[in-house]
Structures are given as C-alpha cells and as structure tokens.
Length: 106
Image 1: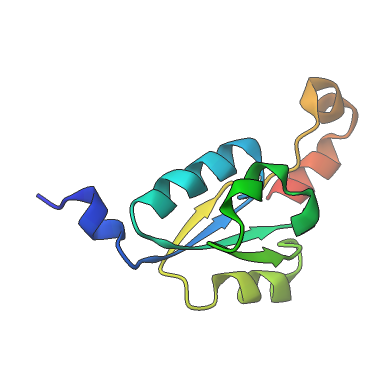
Image 2: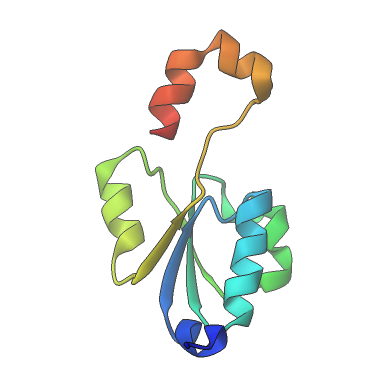
C-alpha cells in the first residue's frame, strides 16, 4: 500500500481553477502532502483572495485555458492535473446563457 504523503512528495501538480473556493482547498491539501503546485486561473493573482495565505509557495499562471497556448503553458512539466476551472454564475445564468456556459466550460 502506498502512503499518500510519499506519493505526493515532489509531484508536479497543476490545479486549474485553483483560485476558486474548491480549488484553493484542494491546493492547500495537496501542498501539505508535499506536492509542487502550479495554479492556472483566469483570475488575476492580486484578486485570488482564497490564496493570499500561500504567498509564494505555489506557482501562479494567469492564463485563459480556452486558448490552446494557455493550455500548453499550464501543463508544461506537470505530472498530475486537477481540472477545476469553470465559469459559474448560478442557475439563472445557466438558463439564460446555456451556449456560453457550455463553450466556456468544455
């Protein structure tokens, strides 16, 4: 059986949407297990309030993952990817703009 902390130690992990509520909690947990974290998010770093406590302990990329070059930049040298990036706007937004929600989140 593999111990979780030994599995994650030194692993290069990308968390897309890592500045969001769920993503930031995942970042905290995997970072505590010893992983090297890269966060890819469209949110500017100075607006990533959920990550203020991390300071410089993670690499932060402000990229648009809807653009292929942004995807290539984000996954470079990563071993594991957690894809939590999503456009969210509540039920009303989903109903009013279904095509936009679909294209942004695919």
